[in-house]
Amino acid sequence: MIEAAEIERMSVLERIETMELLWASLSRSPDAVPSPDWHEEVLANRLEKVDHGGGEFLTLEEARARLLGRGT
Image (cartoon, rainbow, N blue to C red; front, side, top):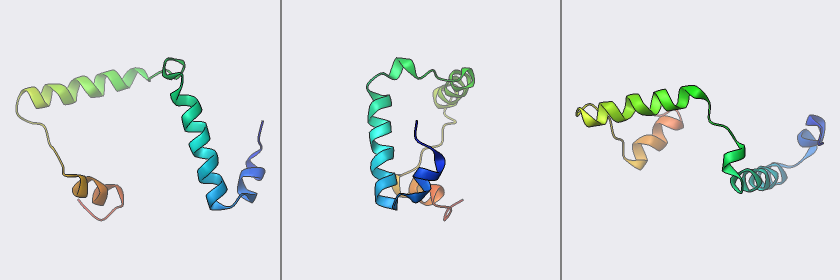
């Protein structure tokens, strides 16, 4: 197994490439990655909000700004 110190010695590009390889590996067998129990509850609550007209939708630009800390 790779050690954390080895990852720290990698360049940013090497870390990104490694992360992409890991993600691709996990994506090939999604059933092997269990979803936490609370995910189902969160999704059900959000769907209920949408069904009752209370869902909040963002444009891609708004979502990106929020994720990058530039939006409210």
